[in-house]
Image (cartoon, rainbow, N blue to C red; front, side, top):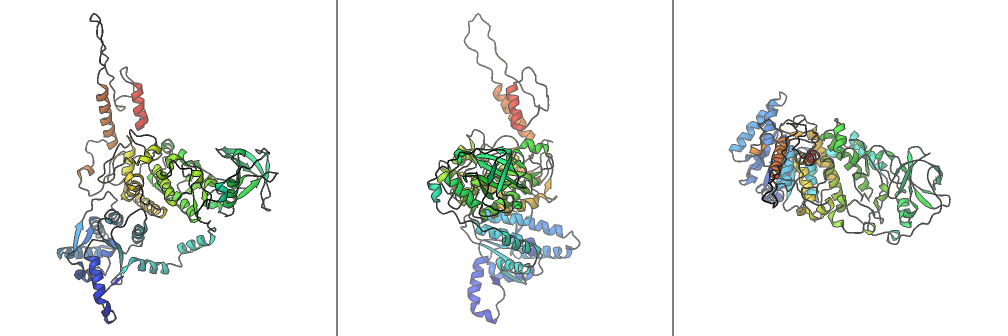
Length: 629
């Protein structure tokens, strides 16, 4: 799409193009970003669009105006920014532009606000975005290709180049051609060259999976035993000390450098398991990928299949590290930035796995080991779904609602099933260890999954039985686009709709990491400030700069939101308990004894248990809110 003044060659198409452009700009929402307003061709572009708007106005978000004013104070860009501000005022007076502060609970970066606005309003009206930002353009095209969002209206992304408005895809292709020789592109080419051959996609159950037969074995295998492979370069493997033991078998050290061996329990050995492991081992995955797939099958002296070799992993289980509030309390170097980086690292591994046409299936926090925010290992990979062999196991609290009640051992999962489990994992990292379906008065998480009761607030939707304490503030400090994706996946209103893809999760968390690295957008609590709190467990709702909503104002009583909430809850509990016991019928000659209700003091007021305090209730409050009386 190119918009320009037609020359002689364009004369025949002038009427059709003008009609198409008029339809594009005369209706719907037109958004423009800072870099376009700062472009030398901005004035020319506006004059070109003037006859096409038909009374419609280009929306200049307040965040763009604020950025222009900041740039006007920077010496190198002051002249250009002042000129842009002058042009904006002029075009606004001409009725071509208008200011708008969209009611979005999002970040203050203009690009992020534009992205959130498109996500929020694309289902209500056609949207045109004019941007020269390549990253924003790609993020907007991700929305176009996003299966998790229904597109009832058209989204057009244009770029200003050489005084012309072009379809952003043309600009992107041109930039990609120009950067084809860069180190980044060279790295991409090297990755493609080293990427293993993908498996075939899962279509139908393999015969071995339909009718698995047991493999009878008589030889006992353990520490000190020798097993062999069919690889002449590594024929014999001596088992060392046992490292761990699970439901299917035990893992041993070996004499092969960097490798360990998983030996299945005799009762677990089947023809299906043998065929699946041998298939997984047929596609080599480099150790540095951190994905512990089978590398070589191992056999006993009778040539019976017994297990496999895999790369040894390092780190602590996710559920015992980054998902554990106690562990995080001991590792003060971790902030919400490290949690977001961890999400990016895990998503990168999952993307690699999916490119191999594998599905993890049994996604849970026990199957991921964490070395650092940028280094993780996936273990128990022999359960992955590959071709016609399903993943036979799964944790109910991570399993998509449509799979509850099914026989996982005979069901081939879909990418949509997988995306639900991925969303659970990401949520429980950013709200460490808290399941998205955990709420006051609810049942077990797997029961709540089937009901689709997601308790957290979103925009005008109020919270519904959110767990008491810190969790609502952890949720508040997530960007709106991430909240939208969680809500669409977990809330019953989103059931049956496509879920957020891995690629789009990566885009969202990459942008979140960028925000958390920006000192203008972040602070470290527990005191109240505007922006994103880097504390793992914030003590306040997030406040947004320049938002006039009364709920957005900072508190003036010196308390945090958490302190005020706990005091209100404590007062309510005291009121409930202050009801005296009803005396039973007694002999008139006997005296009636009324039992005084226990009175509680705040942990700030006293850490000494008084005779009229109830230890049970107080310890309950301590467990709930992390008090340490």
